[in-house]
Amino acid sequence: MKEQLERIRSAAEAAIREAADEQTLEESRVRFLGKKGELTALLRGMGSLPPEERPTVGALVNTVRTQLEEALKERFEQLRAQGLERRLRAETVDVTLPAPEKPVGHLHPITRTRNRMAEIFTGMGFSIAEGPEVESAYNNFDALNAPADHPSRDETDTFYFSDDVLLRTQTSPVQIRAMAGKTPPIRIISPGRVYRSDVADATHSPMFHQCEGLVVDRGITMGDLKGTLDAFAKAMFGSRTRIRFRPHNFPFTEPSAEVDVSCFVCGGKGCRLCKGEGWIEILGAGMVHPNVLRAGGIDPEVYSGFAFGMGIERVAMTMYGIDDLRLLFENDRRFLDQF
Image (cartoon, rainbow, N blue to C red; front, top):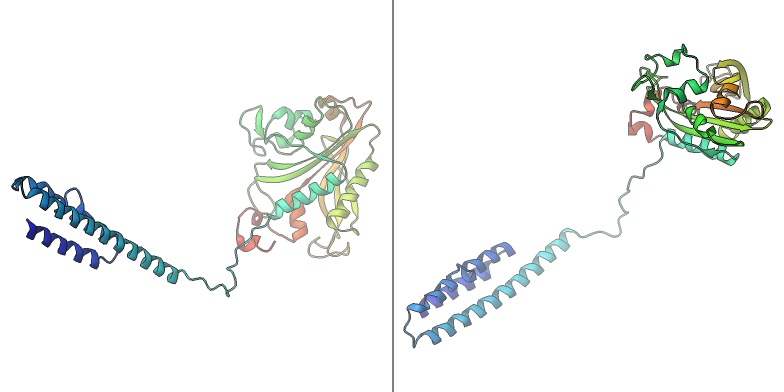
């Protein structure tokens, strides 16, 4: 058995010495010192020895085991140090090189436009009001004085969930919610998404963004509306910007107007942006209809108000010279990186 023990020790020492990596070293440990290893098997066979030889052989086996465990530990530390050195050489960083540039994102043109509009109006004392995008037909149409035969109620223009529930076609329902249970003065804007059953093209989208405004108080006049919009246009498009009111008809305001701004590129002389007219239409506005005030629980004999609404995409396209609405929703970084 002593010869067998010597043979196992020699083989184990050679295997440990020649192990090229930690995995191979672990396989050698299992082969010789594991539960089913050669040295363990030899130790279990000591029962066949004469009683007087067992202590001597047992001591020799334990000595060999200790020697092999120390050799394994030493070789393991060597292999770990060699592996660390290889990693350090492979992962060396040249600190004199410039750091790799990390791409930095930025706000979408629609978000930038929305934020700027909100900044201007909150600076004038408006607060921001929000409402659900899934609305009742009452808040979206009836409370806003839209007659039963109004074209916007058709299923070809509006996304309905049922006869009484729909995706809002405008942010105007927020005005009704803002007035309900409130005592004037009220001064809010309500930017948000709206939905209409339109086919996507250069000027239409089934989803887009609007920003509505509402002011209700005693003695509010058309002059207050014009002054507010004039201040907004100058802050948004430049201090030389002028506004123009054109008579129009909206069911929720009376009187109503389409509002144009002078072209901020040509100053009103006529150019490609304004199509030679010198003016760019950006919003609709007017004095809040008495029926709308009543629907909001406000007495039109005591209070008056004005309202306005504009498409955020329209303003963004005007400011950035974008000629196709679809570009704003395609998420093409080649386009968005320009802004």
